Amino acid sequence: MDYKYINQLLNRYWEGETSLEEEDILRAFFSQDNIPTELMRYKPLFSYEADEAKRDVLGDDFDVRLLAAIAERKPVKARVISMGQRFKPLLKAAASVAILLTLGNAMQVPFSRSSSDPISNYDGYYKPELDNGTNVAIGDSSMTDTLQQSLATPSAPAAMPVLK
Image (cartoon, rainbow, N blue to C red; front, side, top):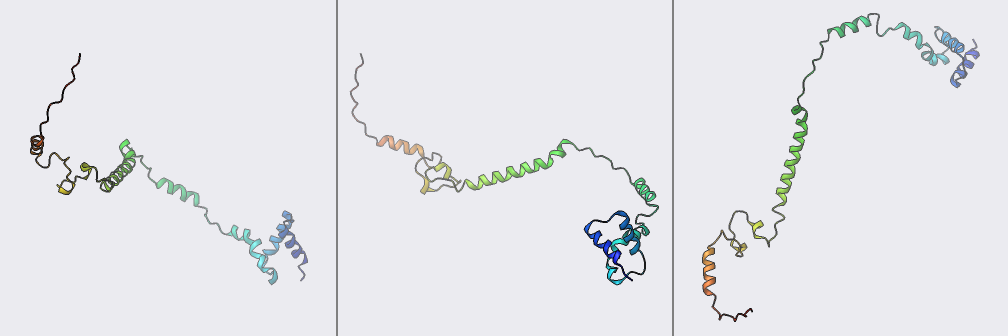
């Protein structure tokens, strides 16, 4: 049997030039049982509507099952969230940042001490090599002051200018 008309309709179908009636002809042709083997590859394309109509995926009782499932659900109760609970994540983040900044500053202090500033070099232990006389609490400062004053030689008083 010659299927020139069906081949012409298929060519026009692929070019998008078929009318709705011609597409109905193709659907009717491919819904048959005896189709030539060279055209068998197009059968699923044109017979899908007939196959889909046979399969009802949702079923007739879909609406009833859906409404029953909705009726079974218990309503969700709204929770009251206080301001403290709302800001708790923000406060945790701020505390984390504050801790990191504090630790960062604490780590930089030992590395930024200069050797010319004895107070910043003080770590709680007396180190005689760092003592340059500015530490009053360490050592006997009263003895040093007394000795310096006693060793000072008195000089002759300078003549004072007379103011008129």
